[in-house]
Image (tube, rainbow, N blue to C red; front, side, top):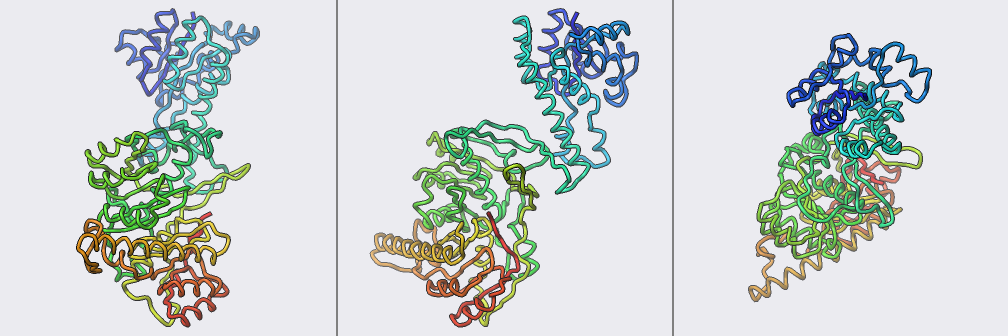
Length: 562
């Protein structure tokens, strides 16, 4: 008679497995809670304590180490000497071990008190799984309810193939590894331990990787409450690697301007309140457009409709086929506007029911509901043969030093703070040109700052001219004459955004080492520059600003992104 040992916390599917084993003549051993569950459902398993002659202690810990269990699991059944030895000791072999573990992972995510943490560490379960997995040629090991069906089918067919046995053993070791990694991280509580272990579980196989011939998958951490595991996918086609990367950047960028639904304040809020206490916090709607993992439109406004319209006008070409993120719910009226163009993905904290109906008319449009702002304290990227780990940049300002003869006009300060938040998400060398809390010019990924500056300034000039021209045309069409004091585009946009005045604010992700950048900014109409400072040539940039009538702020904080 074959013997199965069943000791599970998660009961899904276990009754079907146990009933099949019972009907086909297997003897079933079980621990207390599992045995009680099986008896409640009409089965009569043997208590493990009947075999070990040792009562259960410490939540299925000690009894698992008794020789009657350990030897029964580990004994190689195809080798005569060990097999004869356990027979002489009247120890029966165990042919199937079905164990899943106490939910240490879930309890850690929920934030159990530290003094209670050790109580959730499963000792016997991992030991049984490890023993059974080591002896996989003779012992079937089940650690995942998803595998019960395939084992039942194989047993019905007469034998379990060695390939399946090996696969199940590998899954058991993988689970134990993840379990131990979580406990290790919990006890060490270090950002940079000597050995770094990740607890990741596959969420989905992606359509393809960065290119169509590359395979890819998405894994979620099980021991943290990050943004992605809490996302709901409400419609659209499957995701690719690029979609996920763009979603990640879009959601991080939009949440850096605050996520009211979960109480997240704008990135660097504490810094700015301490250094600039007179600048009020105004929680506005943010819209972010990302294309090829590059922000191509970041805006703030009083409503989602206004923020989206500004984002569209800043770069109407690049928004085509992009990922859009908003930190406020999407209304039905806005959904109608979004459906006018081709988009890959929309991410928002919520959607009006009618908005979902409208957006779902586009069958391929990915609709994502995101509840949580990003929470990960560390960033990890792979290098060949290893990984790089660093703290997430959550620092906006070290200081607010006016280093020029002129101080920034008060009307420019909100745009300057907006600019350094936005530039944080653009690849270095990064420049953002701002008008009315909108990125009318963005350039990044350039090997020197003057190229980035020239591109951003040029794009800003073209965007401002195009927006002003469109505004003048629409007002002329509607009223017969152009009035710059009247709001346009369905009364959405303020005159300060649609007039022909050049953008006045220039933000750099790091210091500006040469005066050529300042001279280019001045020629484009810039009146206020914000940068980290810290170059050995700072005096040259300061002199150029004073000569050209530009105010400049040093923040002392760098925002490199590679």
